Length: 334
Image (cartoon, rainbow, N blue to C red; front, top):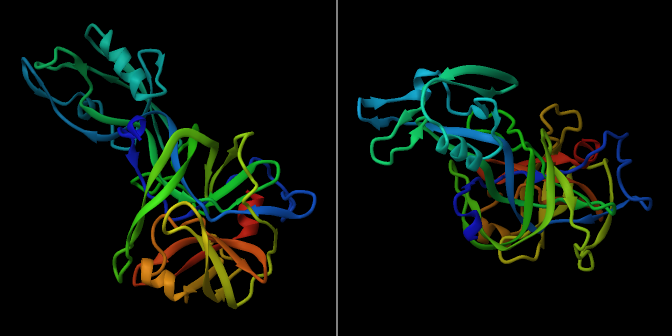
């Protein structure tokens, strides 16, 4: 945890879905048509491939207060990827180039959505430290807790069920991410008008998987070669969900998922926002523990008639006992 203390934590409400290939419907499973069932929590640290601006601030210089970033029209959400011809991939890179900077105007390149913008900036010399600064608060990764949905037998895994987004709602670019074992230690119960959340701890610094893609249906990646599959259950996948009884697998205490009953009250296979099911939590023990669907349960697999049909993605804020699920075909086909 000490190595992760400077990283901003985001709690993901969707299931992570990881896959590298574009394939025909439901063809990405192992030869026997099965995947390993998830439901276990995971801690994610996702690198964003640069120094992302999360705040604009002033610099106190000998000549008064200055704001280099504001003057250069750098915006919150921009990712600084180049400073004076030097590639920036992390906050440490940014610190390094500023430490050796001797003053004057310099060109920087920022990524703003799909655009790359070049602009000139005058770093200001901070009066207290004597160091040059841009007047920005930056991060180079985001961290959080989510639920693994499935692991294929070729070690590809999927979770979240929706994209990890920036504060502005844009798809967050992910260069690479590390996945760790996680233990749920506390629950903030959901209530009408306010989403609850799972709170957890990264168990250790040894990663169990690598994430390599963030897209509309979640995060994709590959588990390590020494990952232990012995406690996991292999299940078939199915794209024929129907209204009625189902179960979800989620972890709301510790590291081991449990089965909880739900009711699928609506099926919409063609929904373009990947909201293919409306589900209602009916399990009394889960309702007592969480109040319904909470942040961190995203990716919890939905099983009907013994087959994996999808994953929990969102909660209804006006009724935390209800939420959306995405179809397994969206996750596999990604």
